[in-house]
Image 1 (cartoon, rainbow, N blue to C red):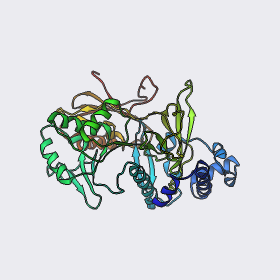
Image 2: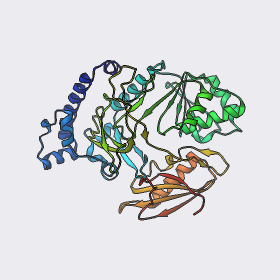
Image 3: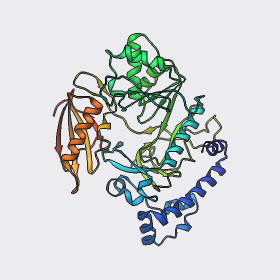
Image 4: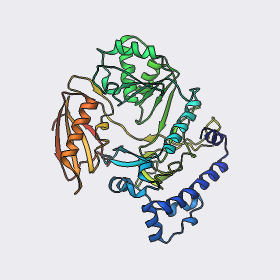
Length: 415
């Protein structure tokens, strides 16, 4: 995979299209034979799978959206389910989707990321300080960090960062001697802010970010605290498209990872929705999947990095306010507590006050509300910590933001 990805970043635009069309043809034929959804769709549509041969033919396939992966994701499987594993996410929509991954697709995902890291001089397997929602102390032993055997990663929970434990935490981090720091921008800026308060820095070779749209103040704070360049990538739990910045400052889609279409957003002349067709997940083929993420105009000139990868404008992805725990700790990217609440039409978590959270749920006829509530309480204990107040409200519709999107996590002053 690394060899193939290395060749593609030196390929011409025509060579990239030839690669995409070859993979597309093979994947369409596989899906038409083995995926129940596509087997039935091709039979009903009268379209011969062999007629889908080029990028121009891609538009003959149906557009997919999150509803397909909320209600019947297993119908897309082209491999036996035992050879895959599920993943869940609410993304930016408040509707929890289920997808399936294979060892090959996960290896390709990592290889594509490692290629991007290499543009900034980062080795394929760097010693990485990882700040996301991972719990470094699953057994309740009071540990602040956890080293993952064989992975060269030191895990720090984004929800366990506070002033009182910072000195001990920094001592453990420096003993590990990370080459890069990796995580959500909100988590990384939280650590960078704590470093600033102490007048300290944690120099690394690169800051690897994902999952959130970054602001200029966040970028400045990360640069101050960590020193290294920011290496950002865009992706989704569905893994239908990937993009990231290069060393010359461009933000490129990765065309060997997937085919990226940009559909006009109704009523807008300067905004397009990202639609992805992944070319790597043979066990769970998806074609023309609407991500719900929007992108602005691309730069008018080619990137000076020299790669033939298409340029993207600014991506309007996940933006969330941090919640506050009962003990005053900030809780970045709080929608993690709803990402595995499957079987609901819609779900949202709202902070009514520090340490006081309400789950708003729109069930389906098959929803198991008591089981979902138990899972939500367990998620709050795991990610936010014990001592929080949790309530539930069952609705037939969750109000949208002014943009029309359902935000999976919101902060309100009063109820």
